[in-house]
Length: 265
Image (cartoon, rainbow, N blue to C red; front, side, top):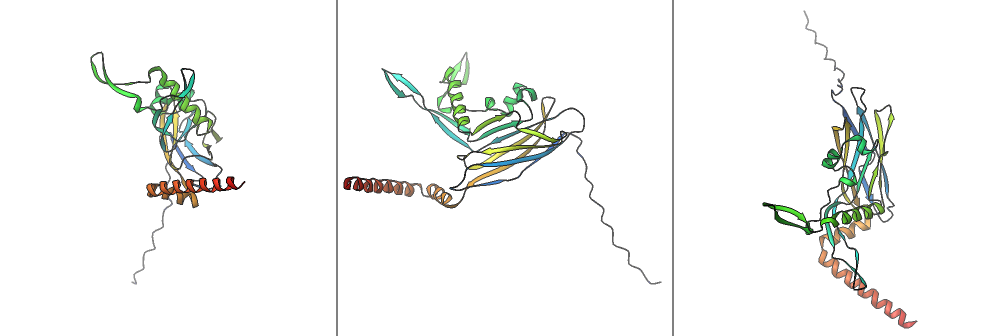
């Protein structure tokens, strides 16, 4: 009997299993933003889907944090009838950009403690002024960190948030996430202003049920300079001393040229 070759195995179709727990999926339409001299801001769409195994409603919260940067604030004080700048207060580690968008009001999604622990919302951002802190002993307890700003801390903190909001760098939108398909598919928009800081942006997409976070997806958005601005930026950081000397030389040359022109007129 002539042996007959066995037929090749038939590849089975992949099996997709639905998760047993509430799960959120998300992606960005654009993960890289290129900043040039003509940059006028950007609008990025975040889209995703929610798997919810039961009929209990679920909420989606999107939090975007830009690269941290120190912020120095001063305020006007009147001394002997003259308005002067106060001693500056430095906030370190403040996000250069912050946005929190949700399907409804944050207070209706989770309680105060949960929002504070997860830093969701500008009221729960961790903004510290380390230069104004000191370590003391209180009531027999050593190494207690207190702020020299005391009751003024909230005023300085609120001023920082107001400045960021005015520049459209901080925002909270209670209707920024919208379902488009029976509580399964959703979308949100990220609006970057013209002066958005460059660097890495961390995007958190969180799913809440019953006041607790039950699922999360982490995404990354990068904003980087390109073209001539990128060359100047890299040169300034790579050779800061030479960049400083060239800046001084250009300023002196501009002053000399201006003086010659005004003298002729």
